[in-house]
Length: 224
Ligand code: SF4
Image (cartoon, rainbow, N blue to C red; front, side, top):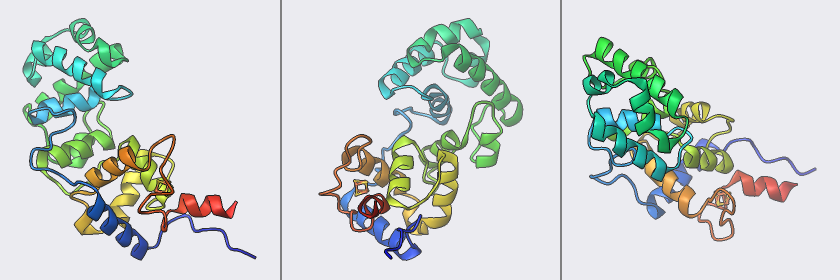
């Protein structure tokens, strides 16, 4: 009887996959700013909050409008919720996000003197900041070797078998354990580019994919 494919790639296969990603995909560039190209840590953190369930273009519009009114924790705290909601309307869920932003900047000022902390646990204790936002801030603002898991990274990792998880947060945890250390610095960039150019959400280019010999999604479909 043929055995079903495993749920995850072996350590050696994970290593081989990252070697191929490094060979084929662009990594971190010196001017990589995130998300959406914000120029400082505070604006990066706020843009992360705005980006929840929002397209990049809409997040950028909301961020631009908001930062034209206030671009420091103190000036943002001075705005009332209705003003914030009006500015960030393009990114959706604007009432809830305005409420969260007020709580976020109040906590940032109270606990960290208005400075964005360089620590995952401290970031995740801030209102409205989850693992993805925390990891984006650590990676982009503090140059930490952290693979932030967005929708592309989540899809690619679980299709390939780098991880076997159902949420982005658990994928991030498992990836941290399974990815080789040398791949942590650029892994986010390789995986995103791979997800955008090869392992597309709707129609992945499996036939020409340079990872198809390892991919568990392919092995599973052959098994069915
Ligand atoms: S073989 Fe297909 S599903 Fe697997 S990683 Fe490549 S593009 Fe994605």
